[in-house]
Image (cartoon, rainbow, N blue to C red; front, side):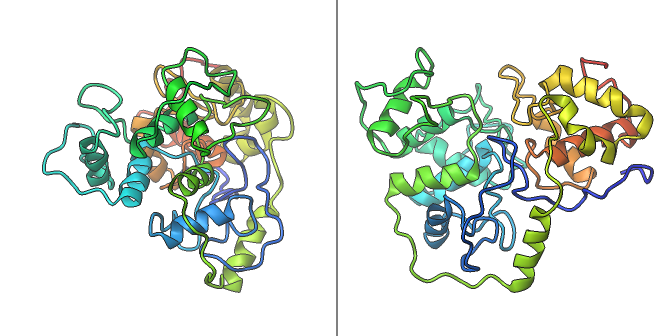
Length: 328
């Protein structure tokens, strides 16, 4: 990152914002016990610890689960392969997973007929999984029976409607409220833990590790950082944009963000897969986020999304504003 760009937001703000709603995470009655500090005391803690105890997840880093990060297609493959203990086949049907750390898991769920990929010979490993797509992954993985009951009002006519009904009938989901399923919303890691724990009927462990006090203090310090956005739309992200863009470029960056995503951090173009506040392309995200100092961060993480946008403008070899259709 260019030395002229402030980096006060450089530390990972795990769980400081959510993909589903921009707000601080619900941390209620944490007891300092558990495998993950960012899940301690949250609604989905029992499901997350159940997955951990079953060996289905080790988190996103030491003592962290990143519960509000969107689940990628490659992570989905890893969850399902571990949950079902699927064998790895000798051959791969996909040409775009060679660099994925979960390539073997992707091949495993393909061999088990859980996925046919995103296109012919492609799996699109870095794309996020929508709640509708999650339903199809789980319905196939668990071989759930069909259901004649459609409990939701917002999935009518969708490709995944039947699978959504299947996981609802199995008691895996109650939807997102008001008779809706929110099929196009990215599914978070916390939600995925809940869906898997219910589908597999995983028990919650009785004994959990004690989270080191320094880990707890660090996490609580992150949560104490000023919340944003400060208002609706792209303008509400001005304090964050000011941290990464030069003063003379802030207004332009906000206009581009408004044009690209309307200031919605969970925005995703259904055609191209472009995601987040600045609509980055998933295929380039891993390389660019790493170069910008945000390796491993979700494309829907507002801090990382803004920081990578600034990196493209100031530090990328072919830098500038030409990366966006909207020019501000």
